[in-house]
Image: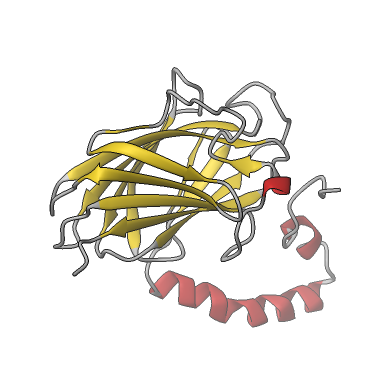
Amino acid sequence: MRPPEPSGFSLTRFFSMPGLACRVALLLLSPLVATEAHGEQLKVWATGAYSFSDELGGFHITGISGIGTKDDPIVITEELNSATPVTLTIRTTKPIEAFGRAGDVANGIMYMRIEVLNNSGQAWVEFQFELQEILNQPSVFGDGLSFDQRNKTPDNIISSSFADFDRDFEPYDRLLFKNGKIDPLMTGRFEFLITDYTPRWTFYLVQDPRIPTG
């Protein structure tokens, strides 16, 4: 059974500590705060019932909108600076309620549109997405997370740059766009539906641009 709320550090509980203990804890935490302040700024983008982050590196989110419905999909604009896999971190920011009203709760149904600028200097001849509930581990059938696995003939998987796609569900949840190309400094658009019938507080979307081989 999943926890009713995400685990983390409670500021309310922290500042209820006795005065001396609170000051000591603040001194211990201060190096972490300074590192974040002087390092590369991390920006978390929130829309609908979710937040999206490029914290794992290799790319930059440049914009976001939408709530995740078919009429108002979550639209993420990104810039990738290499032809290597990058991982988008997705978190819920509102209560989880399967099949609840989109935007008000995280309901496990997310219509997505991702617009990716190719700033890698190399043409991409394929582009693959992979869902993971646990970072760096394949998403299996039982976790409920997939690219609309129950729909055997999807009509909502579209790309502006690739003519065809393949979906693999076991032992991975992968969506591969093929038969096309995104040249350097051009933008490709991808549309698809993510479903999670046992919604989690955090999951990941790996994005893997492919370059010609041989």
